Length: 301
Image 1 (cartoon, rainbow, N blue to C red):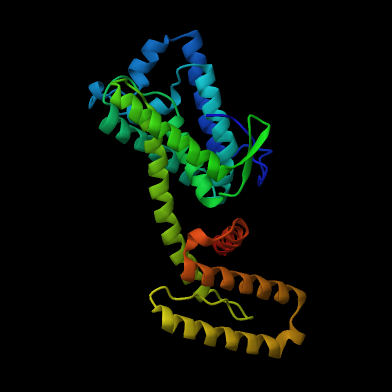
Image 2 (spheres, rainbow, N blue to C red):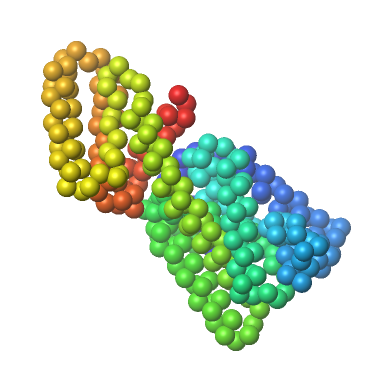
């Protein structure tokens, strides 16, 4: 895993609480490994080992904070620093982010149980791969600089890393070598499943809240997903025509704030129309930002 700064960042001048806590614990653990406790003893107590189950079940999470060395820890934590804060900010705080981080770590454990079943699993790579996967599913067109020189899209980078880990894991399994690459893939797959479920349920909530949002200037509409495509198209045309007629009648009486609110509503309507017709994967980065802004406004209300 290489380290590179994204070119499109929200506010990375300050670490978010969840990312900061993970990095602080990982640094503290590596310091203890180097000064007070031998690496072998640390992995024996906190690394995940199938042979130690079920007596040491806590290791299914604690293995995320034990690393094979300073470089191993530094690369993982730097990647977390690059991709984690924006997720945590978007999700509204550390609680959901930390839960997600632990879920991806458990995904690595599951793949370790299924494909490896030998040796001790240590390191945050599975959870970090999950964080990167979640990032690329929301902002795929962001760019990072590979080795600080060559610009690469986040989507290309993350898909490439997952593919390499999968291929190396398959080759290692065929040779009978104990590898942990499948654990990395397990974290990525856990993140993918979680994000798909969250996106689906999140869009349903946005539609319901937008439809019921009280606003004197008429709220934006939500397009029913269950309506047949042909009927939905006719219904959308009728709604658009009526909306334009109402807007034309009152355009001269709208205040500047009302005009801005109306413009946001029209933009949201267009994005919801696109989701209804082509799915959420068709959205551009700017259109996803429109949904994020609306979600934050709804949470504030």
